[in-house]
Length: 275
Image 1 (tube, one colour):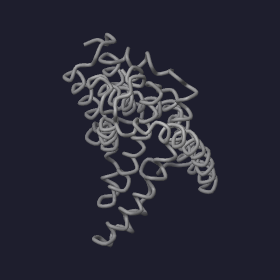
Image 2: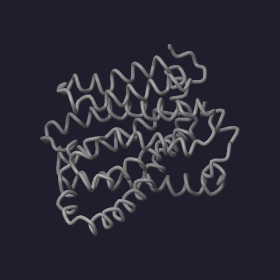
Image 3: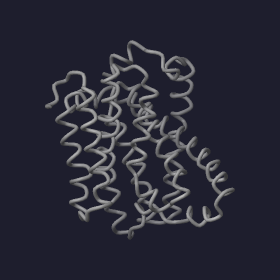
Image 4: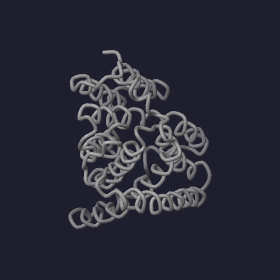
């Protein structure tokens, strides 16, 4: 059961995913409190994932840092824009069938429905806990484990699978937004795909993913801790910088020059990095 650096077995992978999902949904059924909630939701699954696959995750998590940051910033921004576009289409479709969609979409995000003081604290939590923990679990174990099982093949499909699981782990969106929740799950899935792309192309780097993920969440809390204008300005700057990397590094250098990587065709160099 202890991580050995070898290929992950399917049975141990299923065990790890089951623990992640059980702990993620535990707070919906049992009152755990803030500290207990973080220990259960993040602490327990990280311990299990580390026992099962930790050596493989840690051995690659600082690889190609410079490239990884450019990939992560670029892919995050490109997929963010795509998510907004698809979410708008989904909302228009939902509105045709349910007029209550407009009211539901205006509900505050439960994760951001806190006081300014708490939001300030949560900015630090997002950077130091949420970003690193979720990337370790969902990209390092969930996606990285699939890459290990399938020996680096079919990475794009595996990325979709792991990103769907990542999005479904955010159950509070379904509870809060009901019929319009697919809008948020589209965006979460695309966020997951952006992180998977950066993880795969960088050879398994998690440092860049954790930082960008944490910053993205922290900016959301910044708007609550200060003013909405400050939050939107920070988000706009963050997105604009990312789009520069997205266009000139991800699209022009990675996708256009190496189109086979997006098609899912095996790439010997990348496969060696990915498992």
